[in-house]
Length: 339
Ligand SMILES: [Zn+2]
Ligand SMILES: [Zn+2]
Image 1: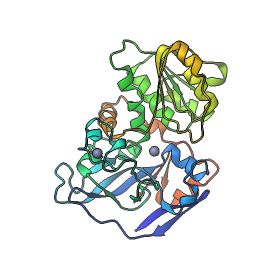
Image 2: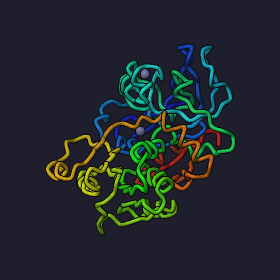
Image 3: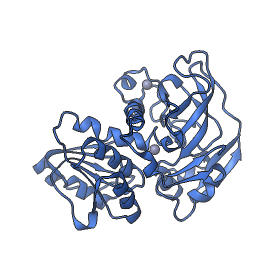
């Protein structure tokens, strides 16, 4: 089969590699229908992460696909199912998985598709992937939804839910600030925030394309260069920019919450005294994806969320290397196989 490989910064190519097979009885094999980039992938390609020296490795950890084979112990997932795929490799039954922390799975730790972390598990820009613990890591999609725009449901789109809903649960009329920047994540968060806190959610950014998308999502949009409110109950940092992170940290009310999804590979200076004086609950960490995929899907099916507005373009599979190494790959390019 063909697998897209990250060779070195700025260089991607398709290699012929052995197709994966069922190894454990709980595995499934999935052929992608559509795959897309995590915002992190753009940083990998642009040499902004520590992964540069490890090429070639299969890239990609977001896709929807069709199940083409299942191991004998799969009970919930069947051949032919159209599924969303969680980015992480998680057993679903260990203590951390049961706490809804599959990205901390005690059996597989940081393992995931598309990056050389705790083994190589293939990439979602390949024609076939092996999904361990398929009953847990896959989410069956109903045929009433177009799977293509759900290519991100196993990672960036799921972050939209998990950075907002658990934090505001129980708050009455929470005010939410969403600070965009990495590409798609802030926009998915904006979609969720606008749905959960209509009239009380604001998207801040300084990029005209992303702010245009946010406007289409119906959320109030402000140019970050013109300031920001400082009374949000929750602000989500999807900026991946140390200077902007400082603004996000200042944007919440005393004892408010900041959830940060930007990955900062270098130490960042933050105003701890100011955080101390106001009281800020700050969380920075990997997305846990799988638990959020179910409510995300329900809200897409119900028409509450609109991932199709976030999609920046739909391309053919063969265009992956060309688009992803181009000057402007777009904030959420989706590549469809067999289109
Ligand atoms: Zn990711
Ligand atoms: Zn586990």
